[in-house]
Image (tube, rainbow, N blue to C red; front, side):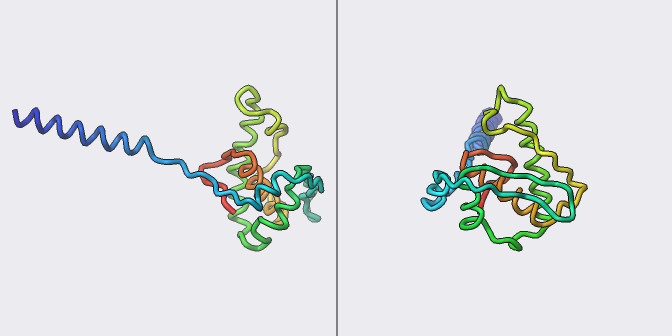
Length: 152
């Protein structure tokens, strides 16, 4: 009798722990009204991502990104280059996987693959702008390109 009661209590405790673990909240993004206004702006100024020392160049024509980069994003120098490189490497892999799965991911969002090789030193400016584009993209379109919340 005691053994059955003990097993029942143990089962109930285990079930409670599993339910609590499975229902953990996902964090939501706190997007300010200023940021929402930038997302809805028609600013079409392109942002060129390039480095004089390398032959690599990306041009981002995303309405609002230029304004967001200049007014909301953390300033250049805030992040270390190694931080930016590590985050970019993770997000590029996810991005490229989604480009290859247009039946699952919106092909209007994920149009082209990004050729980013983590073993190449693209310089600070390229990594900074690419990282911030990923943050902008995730916040504007409510996407996740990695295991972390896209914060400013």
